Length: 289
Image (cartoon, rainbow, N blue to C red):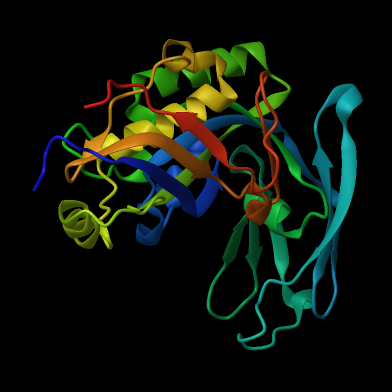
């Protein structure tokens, strides 16, 4: 094969799965949630329940969620059903309710199969009619040095994330820190347009490449997100892009999509507001071979 010609490729990555948790809730993630490869530290309004507002009806529970603090406080009434349509019917009036404020956990007892615990952040995201203001302050990887995925709860051992949490709790007492966990998938964007025999062979080789999301591809995805949002705790990455080569291919650009509307989030930073389904397109800076 002619090695003097190396075609340009675009790399597309997109958030395939998303989850959001308070740092103290990472221990409660299920094994299925330990698949994320990029995490985003965010500031969100404080959420609390007005415990005096809780009302039980046959098919649902009604309560008020207090959003924000001080002059920026608002209240939204939510109606939730503990059980989905495919679960046995249960009269919600038989429940007893306890709110564990430090963990923002809603604990319902009275069901014969045991207590039901719901996370207020998860409930609000799923049932609120408003998007949750989510300010991005730091973006990092949930991959180890050798490419192994880290259990979600181990993220809190990240020294930068620990510094971010300490600084934010001090500087923004009216906000809460939440971690947005993202699992990215990837694919090639461009195909080869040529009759050259060597290029046709290369096209066949790369037609369905095993796009394992290794550290190089994650570096490109992370760099594109950081360059777009410019989080205050990622300053050293703002203008730097890594050289990314994989399976003999040279990527000239990266195209990233997040889809925050799926989670009811309004993503923004001090520099940029992300529009729903917007494509983040960034060049990868390295010399052409």
